[in-house]
Image 1: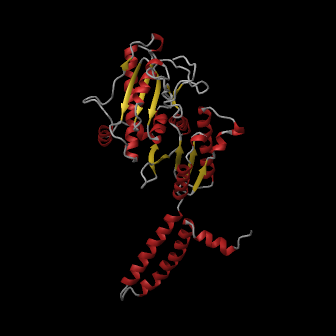
Image 2: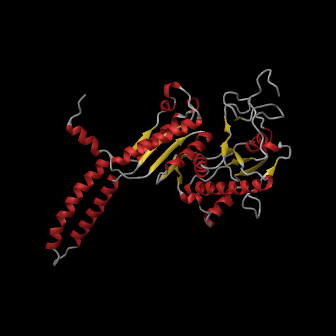
Image 3: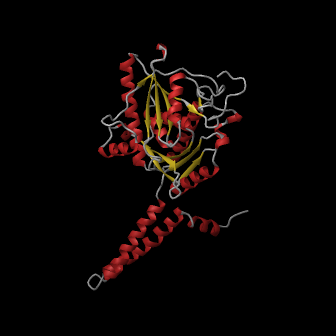
Length: 379
């Protein structure tokens, strides 16, 4: 049905941009109209006209604020279709549409072209290319503003996306966080930038000390060797990070790192860690040592300052552990295996910070967690 001109006008005026346009037009006219009266009353009493003029100017500025470009938001649902949480995805979309002039919502079907399942690396590459294309289109129109990501993903996909985004060199890239706090919903997580590569400030060090379990007088944990590890695998280092309240995560990760086995030795229940998605029972190669970093609080404060301080610390802690283990085992190159459970923006930022390093993440499939071994399987 054809929409009449006055209906289109009314629809435009109801938007943020339309309201801004109306305020600029109306109060610019008022401000300009007051000027002659001010001059006329200058030798009498111009205070009333001055107040009206200043109020009009303030409202014109408010109109400009409403009209200004507010960047582009990109909603990224990387969860498998069976795990996609519709309500959280809808919250991300609403937040992006509210906060930005333009929103790209990547439909899950785009990540399965021709109903084919892409590899994790290919998914990350496709998402990064879609982000790049949307940003180029947005900027080519003359618009300006930051790029903000609204991701929903598992740890592996978030880590790989962070590594891939490092190659695109965006001038400003904010990663939002789907908060568990009912009063916040969607909050800023991290801004991916060079400031994350700097040494911790005193304020950031205080945040880290208050949140993480650190040994007194030792800012970074040292590797714990696995004496039973074969010599050909000693160059592998397990970096274990638990920042969310997942019971038994560190014990499971440590066992998998020591043995390469994905099932617990006591009852043969699955740890959830997977080395080969085609064969979830497949074992992996053991690591020569591990480093574990754990939160001392049940839930991290969901602020950008906390997330960025933790991401910066993790990179520094990993670098220290890698250098220490390299000196210990005498290997020319250390191969790091990452086991992590953390707020998604921290995982993405850690992937971004270690994009050029020899590091891989061990995927955790929550649907396998605590499942018993299939009948006939060898313990």
